Length: 264
Image (cartoon, rainbow, N blue to C red; front, top):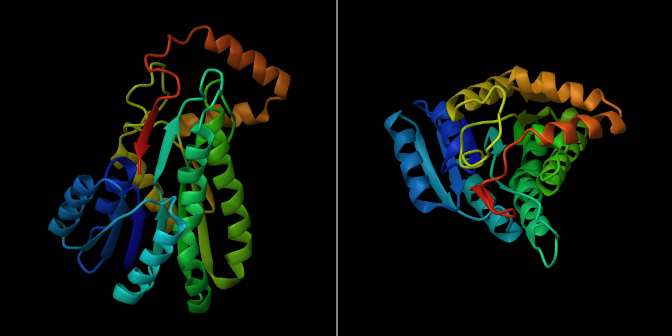
């Protein structure tokens, strides 16, 4: 099996690489953090997989197209491509002269498009493949400081839904994994209660099983699926009241608003 995983230097991405690091498999690891990539690749090689490192920025379309071509020419078309790279950034207080929306959308949404695009045509010609995007429960309903991040993840959800419908006749499966809270750099500074928080290894195991089962979309863990399912069912005015009331009980944020967390 040939697998490409972005955001592979840490967190869920590195954990997914370890899940697919089996003898006979080729795992392509892509991220910007060279040291993290090398460490993750070493772990894959120790498990018997062939590990290939690609240091790249998913928001750079030309770079991703070039690397995609090199992967196909070098080791063959991947069977599974996982778009996991992402950043989280809180909404700036007043939005004055802020590039936050552009930065987050370029990595999270455009980065997912750039990751899949080099492989869609070749997978259609082959008549099979699997594309998986790591999204978030934030795509299901926004909270007061998460508008930019939620918008980027909602864009992923809608685009992969359309892509799933477009590619189904070609035997290409598209999975969208809406993750709840996971212990990574993205959540390390969040000062509020995170129901059902998982380790990166637990999250990777759930995503791997969803891909293996060819599921179209999952929301995990069950606590997040229950809570955000209830949120989605609420009329707008009721949701506003619930969230604004809950916000009064949250502790003050410990990070400067607009700070970011990365898993790219």
